Amino acid sequence: MEESDHYEPSFGEIVDLVKLFEESVKAKQQIFLEEENYEQIIQFYQENREYNKALQVIESALGQYAFSSFFFTKKAEILANQKKFAESLQVLEESERLDPNDINIFLIRSDIHLWEGRHAEAQEEVEYALSIATEKEDKCELYLELADIYEDQEKYNEVVEALKNALRLNPMCEEGLNRFWFCTELTEHFVESIQFHEELIELSPYSHLAWFNLGHAYAGLQEYEKALEAFGYVVAIDENFDAAYICSGDVIYNMGRYKEAIEFYLDAIKLAKPNKELFLKTAESYEQLGELSKARGYLRKSITVDPYYDEAFYRIGETYRLEEKWMKAVSSFERAVKLNKENIDYLASLAEAYLSIDENEKALEMFERIFQLDTHVKQNWINLATAYFNVEDFRKAFQVLNEAEAKYEGDAEIFYIKSVFYYQAGNRHEAIMNLEKGLLANFKEHPMIFDMNDSLLSDAAVIQVIEQYRS
Image 1 (cartoon, rainbow, N blue to C red):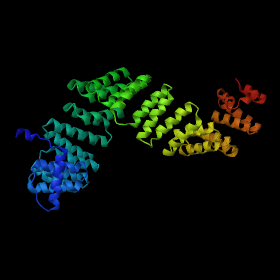
Image 2 (cartoon, helix red, strand yellow; image 1 turned 120 degrees about the horizontal axis):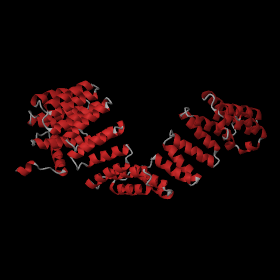
Image 3 (cartoon, rainbow, N blue to C red; image 1 turned 90 degrees about the vertical axis):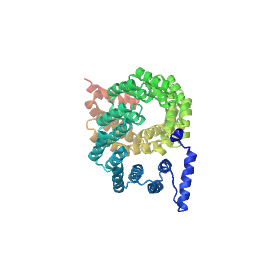
Image 4 (cartoon, rainbow, N blue to C red; image 1 turned 135 degrees about the vertical axis):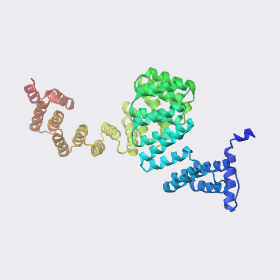
């Protein structure tokens, strides 16, 4: 009999219970089950988000166990999940009358206040519950709730303190450790994180997540060797924890040791589900080694996982760009742009590829789109003007440059570009005038005109003007 108290039913047995209950409802017959059987059916429906059916089970259970605070509390929880807050609070009153020390009552009330933006009331519920809680597990849960309240207000220092309290009560608390890592990344309080996790590891040396967080904190401080040592302990405790291999790979990648990074990523690939970001990391490592064909292989694997993964198409285009295989680069960049029409990096790379195959009109279209997305970058003005000039729309080219000159008053680069464009358009007078403006604004930048058009080196008038301004 003692063993049966700890018996855990199989999934099949729970499904049979659910069928039994549903058949009784159809037949409009009352059935009598043990409390734990009702709990199992309720949990089944909750996990499947069938809340109305769960409520139906609760009503049946209350018909048999009218003084069970558990079923009242569970009813309140489900009503809260359905955003029926007034009904939930009313049910909680009955539950509290039956068991005033049930911590779940205060957690549900706190959640309702939090959902409605009443942070002070939510915090008051948790603090009262903490004052009456006796079990470590309950207190840990309450501190996690307190962290939720602070996080909703973006009070991240207070979030960290609440998580510390939860983890001191339960150093193996997975939720607390995961959230602590998130807060550390957000606040960049890496030193504080190191100090706390060293304390935590003293309490629980075999907490792989504590070692994992410690490794992240060291990586945040760019103390890479210490980070690798911490991740090594994670693997020693749990050799199947794929995130430790990924993070080790990231750290070694940042150290420029790309071959070793690949080894860690490949280990993670063996353990993890197909993961597009992991394939991408592996590809980037091969790209750094100049093994572009292998890089493309892993990028294509990431596309197999997610056919709409725009970054992978973009990275494939970049590998072809490095090989100057422009037609293939264009094809990949076009796919990336089709999937993400407002990514300026994608548009710029596609524009460059179009220019490389003399598709100036198509390049112009990309530069126009970039300009529409962001007029705050000077280079976008210059690129658009250059694109108009390349298709011999000189009026628009100079219109853009004139507007840029007004926006970036006294900018030498714009004067020099206008000078070269006027020179190439056959207007030597305007070319010389703008050259002089550029020389006055910043003489040292003048060699850019020769980079744009090396025939200017043999133009005596141009050289004479430059010499006049040389101090």
